[in-house]
Amino acid sequence: MPAPSVVVFDLGKVFVDFDYRIAARKIAARGTASPDEVWRFINHSPLIRLFESGLIPREKLFAEVCRVTGFTGTIREFAEFFGAVFTPIEPMIRLHAVLRRRGMPTYIFSNTNEFAVESIQRNFPFFGDFDGYVFSYENGAMKPDAKLYQVVERQAGRHGAEILYLDDLAENVAAGAARGWQALLQESPEKTWAAFRQRGLVTSW
Image (cartoon, rainbow, N blue to C red; front, top):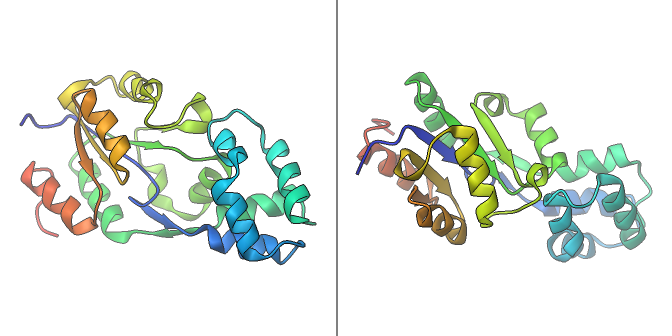
């Protein structure tokens, strides 16, 4: 197995965990829908996928949220609530720091939205220490669409087995493997550290 020359990471469930029930409770407290109703909207409304694909602006999503949930706050408050759902996965942040100290180029590759990115930028300093970022909402597509993987290859200037890719969703991993990437499924930080040790990228846990 060749040594990778760049490492590409998913974001959610890799570096940060998230729970949209946190946002649902805050939005419900300023509206007429219950937290469960708001949570179901976040998880099942096709508008969320459109928003994360960059196909609708934040204003349209906000207007629909207000209509469905009776939310009475401002769009700025909604953005804060919608984005403030993350907690750090510290062992993975440490792993990334080791890679950076060793000079390894790293990239974030994520299905996400602008509210989430703005919140993570504000609250997690590690997020500023990558060579590049490929976000679904900025590129009009979501993983596992091949279009988005092509964006990663162009930005990183690498192809095939030169790229080591980590994601928590099997279908996204499979799409990377189909392009010849060294694609790993994120199951736990312990397993990921072990896989990186096998490739000589890190040492002790």
